[in-house]
Structure formats: C-alpha cells, structure tokens
Image (tube, rainbow, N blue to C red; front, side):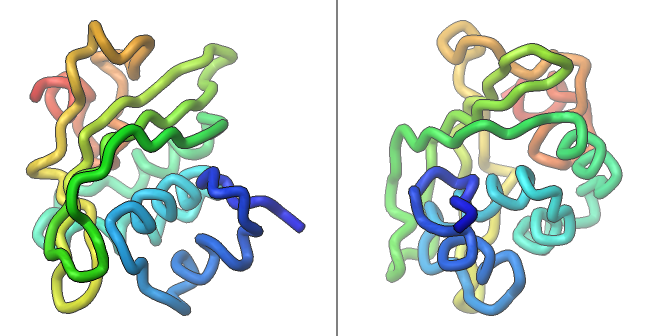
Length: 162
C-alpha cells in the first residue's frame, strides 16, 4: 500500500488518486488542497491546472509548475486552519504549510489559500490567496524563484508580495 502524500495516513488509491484521476470530485476545500499537494508530489501538472479557478488558468504556466514539481521533493502537508470550505459552502480558506526539499535544502511554503466552489466543483482561487508574513513563516521560497502556486510569476510579484 502506498500512503497518500497529502498526510491523511490513508492509501493513495483511496484518498487523493480518485480526485486526481477525475473519478471523484473533492467534497471540501481541504480535500482539494490535499489533492493539489499530492498532485505536486506526484508531478500531476494537469490536475494542478484543472483545479485552478477557470478565470485564472490563462495565467498559469504549466512548464513552471512542472519544473518546480520535478525539482522539489514534497515531504509533508501541515494544515493549520480551516475557515468554511465544507460540503455545503461556496468558498473556504485553508491555511497550510507545505514542507519540501529543494536543492538539498529544507523549505516551507506557508499560505492562506482561498477556494471557491463553482457548479459543484472546488477550485483554487489564486486572486484571493496570500502568503502570511514571511518573518513568521520560517524558510520560504526565494523572492526571485517561480511562485509555487503555478502562476508563472516570480514569488515576490505573486503570493510573496501580498
């Protein structure tokens, strides 16, 4: 049994894989967040793209997502806080820290990720997501590195500048 990278302790085949393969929709914002982390860990770029808010997809650089996913080793996902985002909600917030290793260095990406439900499906809403204060978040993505959200912009001009 292969454990799911999202950190639930469940088997990948019963946890995030059905979402990534399109066999099932994420029931909550947290489930979508976990499945996006698993998709990064398993280099499933199309899923990261497809679960980005439809209005924001034209700004998503698949090659940047792929390059970052291939060079980073995603270790674990830490969910810090949830606001709304349940099965009956239309929006939600997931505060998380993604722990990963890049170029032999342990790193963290700390974010307040916003999600919106459209026609029964949850999407990552990049426009309203933000990185908390860098001083409080510990080691971060470098300011001049591609933003891990997949926008194709530098971190300082994207999540790191909000």
